[in-house]
Each structure stands twice: as C-alpha cells, then as structure tokens.
Image 1 (cartoon, helix red, strand yellow):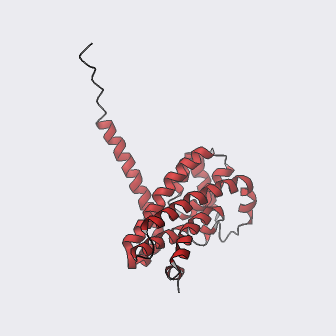
Image 2: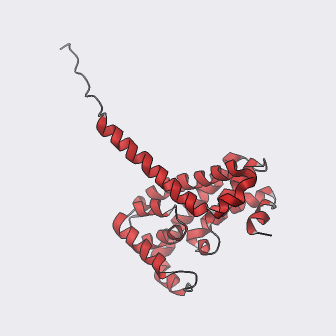
Image 3: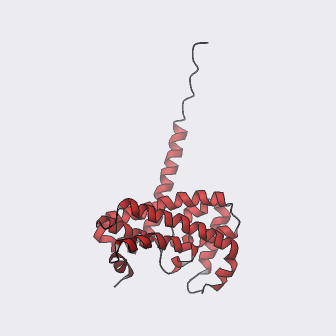
Length: 209
C-alpha cells in the first residue's frame, strides 16, 4: 500500500496532525528530501472532500505547518546549517540543488523564500540557507507567510477538488506547484500593467475657497 493510501486510512485526528507535521518538518528537519510536504497537504484536501475533516481545519493546519516549519528551518540553518548540510548523504542532497538555492537567495534575497516554496528541492533548502546567508528575519518572515498561505491553500484546494483522482494529481505535484507560481506571477504582472495604463486620477480640488 502506498504512503498516500495509508494516510487516508488514518483516524481523522492523526491525519490532520500529519497535514501540519509534514510541511512543518520538510525544511526544519529536512524530511522533505524523503517525503515532500505537499503530500500531506494535498491528502488533507482529499479527506475534506470525503467529509472526514473540515476544510477550514485542513487549511489552518497546512498553512500553519508551512510557515512554522520554514521559520524553524531558518533558525536551524543560521545556527547549525554548515554542519547539517555536510552530514546529508550525496544521494539525498544534490550539490546542484544547493547551488540553485544559493544563487536564488543571492539574486532575490527574501523573495527567494516565496519563489522556492513552489518547488520541492528549493523548498527544503532555502529556509536554512536564508539563515546561513543572514537574510533579515523580518524580510524572511514576510515572504514565508505569503508563500506559505498561497502554497498550502493551493494544494489543499487541489486535493479537495481532485477527490478520488488524487493519485494523478500527486504524481504531478511539482508541475502544479510551478504552474501555481506562474499563475501568481501572471496576476502580479497583469495588475502592474493595468495600473500603468489606468493611473489613478488625481483628486480634484474643491472649487470653493
């Protein structure tokens, strides 16, 4: 039996705990190298579709786990990052992923936390590397919250809509994450274009003196 099927058979309270725990442990304990956090969040949406869990509870658990886990990952990286990275086997941690994450932080700063949220390898590495790179925590937290809310909500709702077809969705979770990021970027660009084409009219001064 696949891991996903096992999670769906768990008692609802235990399954809800996993919805929180998998994204929380993904970056803070590097569990994401073995089990991507989106699996728990996605299956939480499936359980909500089945009526076993309230949708709002799944959203709160997934969002809370995502934000808290990356925050812990930031402080773990700041304190023990170099030592921990050196102990992860090469078959699990590819140097190319580390290089990509470092380059993203170097180019984008805090924004890298938001962008990295939507791809599995970067999602595991960027919080810790942000701490190691001394990205200001306030800036990190801002992008962490924004990314955590959108990422977790997107995957919960995807699982909710997929229902019994969740296995197809789970196989393409990374593609969905990238697609969600592209959609968000498209909305931001569209709003900027519209604001430039239709600038706010200056307030008219009152005719009376």
